[in-house]
Amino acid sequence: MLKIEKSDNKEYLLFLKNILEKVKKTRYEMLKTVSSQTVLLYFEIGKSVSKNAKKEKWWKAVVEKLSKDLQLEFEWVRWFSSRNIWRMKLFYEFFEENEKLPLMVAEIWWSQNCVILEKCKDENKINFYLKKTKEKWWSKLDLIEKINTNYFENYLKFQITKNKSQI
Image (cartoon, rainbow, N blue to C red; front, side, top):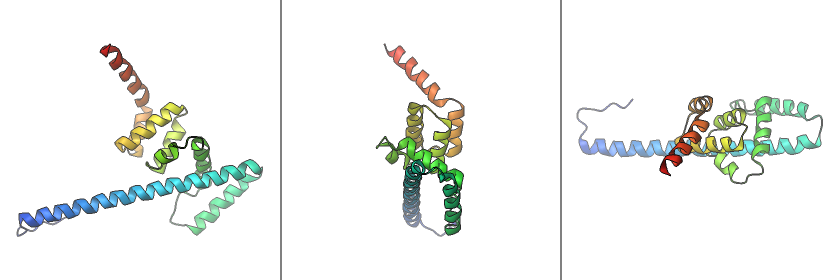
């Protein structure tokens, strides 16, 4: 917590405020970059797993081994469970045909992408929640709440009602 001295003058406080804003903005941009690169990495891992899984019938054992080896090599990364590697595969397979979506999904956190794919089956609904999550920076919990309370369906109803009233 910032401790402001009584002797700090207004010019200094303004100067400090500007520096703090720059630091916070830069930290935010760094986090966005890390998140984006992480999602793109998971997309590439999913692509590799998907391509190889189609060729080999014994691929389930390979994913288990891959998971263990990655967790040993990168102990500090918690996202290399076999369950998550299968999510990466599904993630890739869902988005592989839409060239724009990988760029959009890279702009939100991996956990949010997983929630959207697991809870939404309709492509329009998926696109809606991807766009809204990016636009409004919903947390994972916010996103789950929006999906569970049918935010998409209510939004559509509102738009239809709004359009009818304008006619």
